[in-house]
Amino acid sequence: MQPPTDPVNLLVIDDEASLRRTLRTALESMGHRVTEAVNRLQTLDALKLHRFDLAFLDLRLGKESGLDLLPELLLAAPGLHVAIITAHASLDTAIEAIRKGAFDYVPKPFTPNQLRVVLDRSALVRGLRNRVAVLEDQVGRLAPDVELETLEPSMQKVLELAFHVAPTEATVLLRGESGTGKGVLAAAMHSRSKRAARPLVTVHCPSLSAELLESDLFGHVKGAFTGAVADKVGKVDVANGGTLFLDEIGDLPLTLQPKLLRLIQDRNYERVGEPVSRAADVRIMAATNRDLEAEVRAGRFREDLLYRLNVIEVTLPPLRARRKDLLLLARHLLAFFACQSGKAVTGFTSQAEAAMAVYAWPGNVRELRNAVERGVILTRDSLIGLEHLPGQLTAATSARIELGGPVTLEDVETEHISRVVASSPSLDEAAKTLGIDPSTLYRKRKRSQSKEDA
Image (cartoon, rainbow, N blue to C red):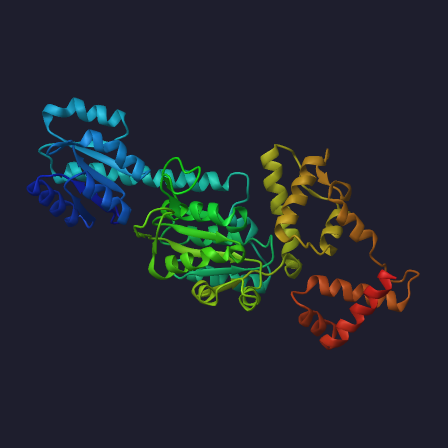
């Protein structure tokens, strides 16, 4: 049997120098990184400084008991695999340790092949655990490849850049309006990275107060604040070896920004209430729908943090700038939700497709996804009609002007400008399409808005 492909971090806990030396030699010859500890205090100190995948723990540590140390190990490092080292006479005790949470045991005397078996089993279980975590995260939402399919050259360039940097360790900042698929793209990049077998952990920056967000991100120790009744592992620790995705980074409280900067620069952090620095092995991705440069000028975002985050910038276009993709995405979404609901819905009526084609989609792909899911739920036929889509699509369609109808040239111009602006990524691009300068476009829009207000 071959050793695990990737090197892992191992902790050897034994009071016998000769046994530690034997284990270190055997494990390092297999390409793994080994740290030694001789007693309880050294073990707990090592766990504060490093993240380990597997620990080899002798049941006898001089006057201390490995069996007593086991619960502390599992509490200090949730997810750590512990292999008990035991003599033949204490196999019953080793089995008892497994009942209490130990991963495996290694009988003395052991061979390198026995160590490889334990390492291979540990790697297999870790890999399956991470895959389950990824699959659970994807349940209830579309697979990334669906939302990222595109016929638009601008979106193709975005994906080309994103997937080019995905295998690197570069920090990535994803920009774009809310609902454009920044989280989906982050997941797709993680799955194409060298860290794909490890977790992708998301932190929603606007969701908690500064104090709770710090605890969620970095963890805390018992007694750090009111309500901290036990140690808590933070998401930085959970993401070890994988990717930490900071969603809506523009909402990160100013008080936390220096700590995040330190994490990105030095790959070090501290749990709340604990003065000990811990090492972090994470790749950082962040996303925002805010103008971070404006936030810097307003004093709400640190300029040095922006520079650290913005090593690679990827900007997703809004759905209104992906008109070639709109019906393609809608049909893929329909197929997904029809399968999920078990309904034989096969398409849209021509009226529904026309309404989707002219609507501006301010909520972007997320709004489209919700609209299609709604349509699948409400239709009793094989097609989704306009009546099954949200009311704003019907209102937008009924407000449209028909060429050749009883309307003035000014009304036609206003409608045309409105449609071009809605389908353009910026006002400058809209002005270029219309063949006028941006100041003229601004005046025309202001005049039409004044008439509507009147």
